[in-house]
Amino acid sequence: MSGIYLILDDLTGKQYIGSAYGKEGIWGRWIEYVKTNGHGNNIELKKLIENDNEYFHNFRFTILRTLDKSLSDKQVIEYENLYKEKFGTRKHGYTKN
Image (cartoon, rainbow, N blue to C red; front, side):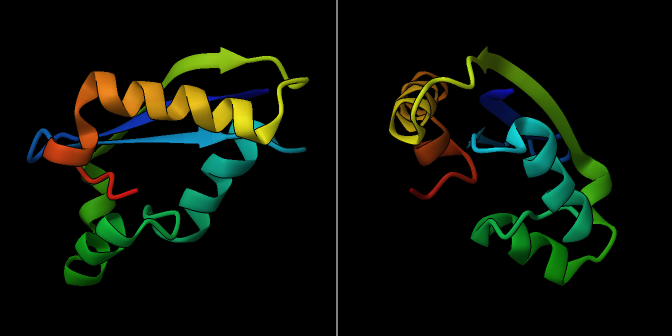
């Protein structure tokens, strides 16, 4: 399933909001976080992991909204941007796009 998710940094309280779509959806996206030791190739999260290889233990993953797989990638990203605005993660979190 596609969807919008949040990563909460329990140490700082900062948040990151992302979206997952395509064939593997949320499950596939979260597998990428596991494979990359917690950063999922996000620039800001990657900096944290590079400074402390165990920092990923501070991350808590939450699904904010599930979305139908029939939605286009563009539609999912529109929902993602809506949540980024609602939570203020560009200004106060790890979201830079």
